[in-house]
Length: 337
Image (cartoon, one colour):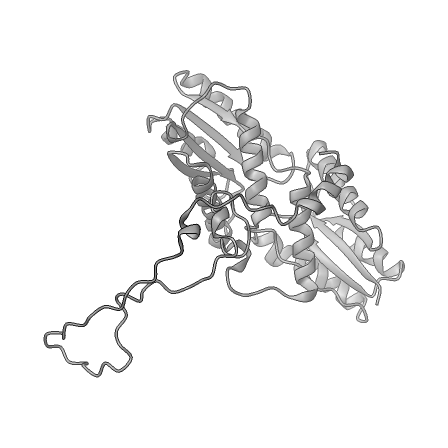
């Protein structure tokens, strides 16, 4: 079986955004030169997704993983891209075309957000984290599932950065808008507001976020408003894409293991990685042989002793090595840092 990868992008009227997408596609191809690869767009750029799939089939592909280059699963991922893929399946009935899920919430993307956050603060005056507010700016959709995931990302970043407050704003379709959210955030009394766009590539909406932040900063010089870079090309982003492509063939757990602090390294929760998941309700759990199901006074029971961890486990944990270190070092050479 000849495997291939089709990267399905939205497309943009902004040439800078299209160029950033092609940079990602080139870096991903360099990572896996053994695999056929092509890319297609829903609109504003060419080739189309259907045409790109046709070209992969002409090159001998017998299984094509379609990976949406989109952050959240809203209308484009749930309807538009599958429609394009279904048309290709009808044209090529002998070719398997599993579709990967959207990036959604992935630990490497959380880490990349933190990297962009720290980059934005480099060289600036010191402001305590609890005097800082983080506003995550997402692309609004008509799908509450996708909108809610922006709030989840905001919560992950809140806990990882230790800021005093975190909120969300959207570029359209749903509310609050970035403009509305930023106007409210300015009134909360924080010394600094960090606006973080949760976007893959440059484009019209990203530039609009920067314009809104600049206008709000001019209206209130007493609050420092900083805008971070968007995600853009980085080995961590390629890692997330490659993981989604791998899942499309080999499967993924249905639980929330992808961002579980016991299974993956999350900034601020490194000590929990790999810890045994033992129950901690022993002191209040009812006895198994308890047959007192009435509504009268409960019998007093002696609580079992609570297990105390060894002293060495109570001491501060050593930093956990990043599980992707070796691969990331190799990929940094591919994409230039």
